[in-house]
Length: 309
Ligand code: PMV
View 1 (cartoon, rainbow, N blue to C red):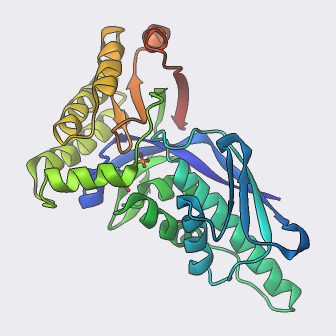
View 2 (tube, protein in one colour):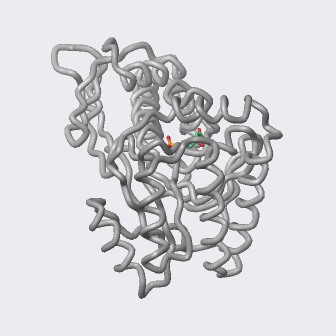
């Protein structure tokens, strides 16, 4: 049996979402999948994800080992002798929600292990709720993001597309969209970027740039629901400019967004924490290959993702 967590893109509202504003986000159709097998000779709790070159035990000094322990502690299961063998279909550190996908997949596998143990001892375990999965996964994200809003975990566990708010969670919407995704290849740390925005806005949720990012989420969501891709693209362009002002874009990300617009995109922006990671664009169907070609000329291998539906 295997357990998954999905990757995600944030179409609008990253960073502002940490301060309570809405974000429009969508799950990808790929992420991280893990299966639990006993660690030989009753050894340690481990994770093995070859496609990320990741081989950790719970007591390693590695951010994902610390994250693994945070999940195990939240579930109060100690350090069972399990190896979680995984397959990742999204790159780590690329702004596509890899850490949340990891945390959700691991949480699901450990909850299943705990429930089987309860059943084997003659007890009856309540079926795991989505709430239990998200609360375990959020314990990991809180460490990785610093001040996590929970948006990545909500999408990694629920799937779909919707508007997320820290106070009320994910409100799914009925929409479908083709999004061009360009992993820039530049790595970055989400917590460093979250910290940079905290300094740029003096940790003040009323900062006008955060407020404008929040209204762009509203405008962009209405545009998407009304099939107005030009309007959605305009909101994305403006959101990128504001994120750049807050200090989380880079010349590489600015250049890739500009290249997408020149190739005919309705709009383009960084997605996720910024500082590297991925950019996204939406474009008329007949211009998609031009956008991908423009990125390829800059050595970025982009792809089209169909989200929502
Ligand atoms: O780690 P990323 O790149 O998926 O970005 C997370 C989105 C932020 O808004 C920057 C942080 C958060 O927890 O909402």
